[in-house]
Image 1 (cartoon, helix red, strand yellow):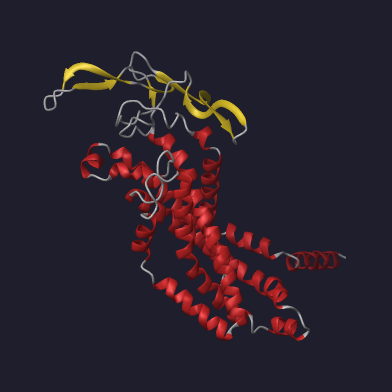
Image 2: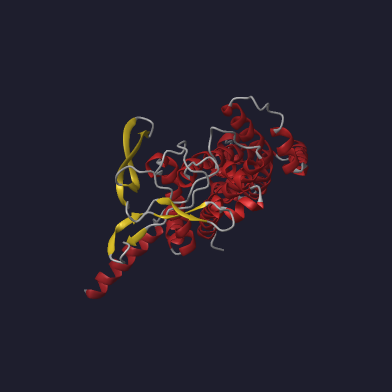
Length: 372
């Protein structure tokens, strides 16, 4: 009797295993990769930062103050060394002069501490664009502006501008990758499926696009937009230029997968029974190239983020009043600024985290989709 129960249990578990969907199998493999799961967690946190940028920003990014103010450190002790609730001490100018610059030396004002907290009141904004509120994730309990990563040359809070800049930088990356994926996947599948002269001429055009030196062409095309052009027009033109030069590589990869799939038995059987080309492409080929496309997307987003940061640093991506990580890096154009105010390089850390997150997720998905 016990043997029969064990046999039934084993057959039931085997039956459940065979009924496991493809997505469940991919998720089970992805969970075994700690780098892939780390990338997934970081990507989710980045998406939260993009959606709720106003909530996480402790200070109004347009508010000006002291230029190049250093970051305010968080302290859990008072002047006597006793443990207290986390606080910061505002900087105040003393009476002592610097022996070289003869400027008043500034230091922490221990007489007026600023207590920190979560879900505090600050500048007003509309959450998700519809819900008016003034609550923020962290900051000063009395509403005092706190510069956790210092300020830029105009006295604007660097951390808050990073949160707002993530929205523009990642929006550009996701939009460009979406357009590149749709165009590249469509062209690749159609070209690989039909073959013949159409495929030959299409691949010659793809090779022509790939032969262009992309960086000089980016600079040349973006310089065609007048400086007085509206910000939305300039941003849209940059997205179109990046997309127009990025779809060719995706189409080449998808074409290679399609050429292999078009010779598989079930595709030939669909042709034999008279299935339309549209049905074969959408029902039989597209689902099988989708795994490769998903991995390519996660690996393409970091490239676009780096490209936008580089073009923004050169002044060819985003124009004020928009905020992006590349535009913020324009303040680091001179060695003297970097040496004197190193906190201006803070956007670089967020760019590196974004690149690592999507690359780690892409590597984990690649191993989960095709473990061999």
